[in-house]
Length: 215
Length: 219
Image 1 (cartoon, each protein chain N blue to C red):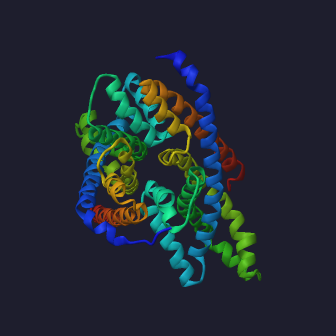
Image 2 (image 1 turned 60 degrees about the vertical axis):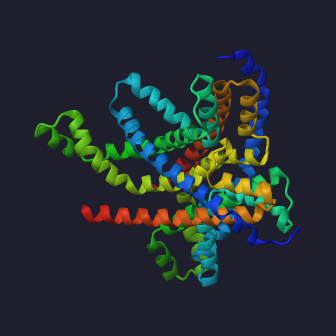
Image 3 (image 1 turned 90 degrees about the vertical axis):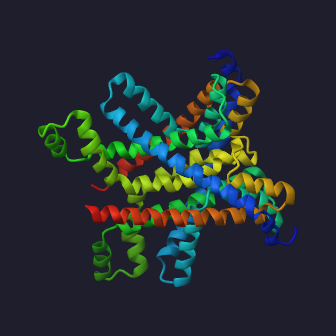
């Protein structure tokens, strides 16, 4: 173990971890927005919207995230989309995780007992009122854990943006492995920081889930 | 901005198909390794003495909390640091295999625990040893019960195998990059590659559905 070297490079990794956090948070927000739209489309009454929703989920979950990033970042300029690596990373990861999160949201909404909807309609609630006042508040609780799993997956998945030269944790690790030839030490530093980020998110999900759990 | 022209892909059909073949090879070998090591890790965590179980638990914790890409770098460069020079292909297979073994082990551990205790008691009372009970009674039932989850991991493995292109293995993504370096047409090639992965994914999914149906019938 080369501790002096580890201490010397550590500040670079802290900076890189901050980029990983930024990428993850921004693509999480984009992903949630995409997921809300896609989940609504998949559960709507219109056949066109339903087909679009299913197609979106199937394409984004049926192909590697790496390829989606490459199409956007390297292929984008050919169809007039010129993005900085950071922006391409956020958009690519967000569109990808949106497909997974849409399924988490849909699962939670479908997980709300059917009797709740029937009861609400019976006492005179409209469709929208039922959705807003009865179904969604209950579904929101059910989706905390699956969305948390998606978020943790997103943090680890954000390593992919190193391939389009965003200087985040994995990119920094790769660079320092190349310059120091000390893969174990460098992996240790990067792993420590990833674990820390994942741990914070997992704890937050635990707290939220416990606070809002239906019992 | 230039017009899109998918006919640039045609001359590279052979290269892309070759890459696709290697993607299949990586997925299949990765799947076999991750399946057996998954069982091994799960059993070790549950039944092995602490000296073996704890390091494996630590390893699983470490590999579940970090990105596969980082693990691939560790294995590819780490093996050569400790004096084992392996080709990228071996490092890629080992990386994919170990990464998904950890996820399979996580599923399998829950599967083994949830096999009815009466099964073990029954096997022991008719004279099966501890190992025999695990091998012939508990694990087969655990595997059958966790098959859908293991199948899901396999689907993820197929897609994640694209990452080994980064350490220079000539699978589907890497062969597309080769073609792009000659044609400067990333959009056409990456869309084609996405379509090929999509097809592989459909084939794998329908295959898994068949297997699950068979298993369901055999109950």
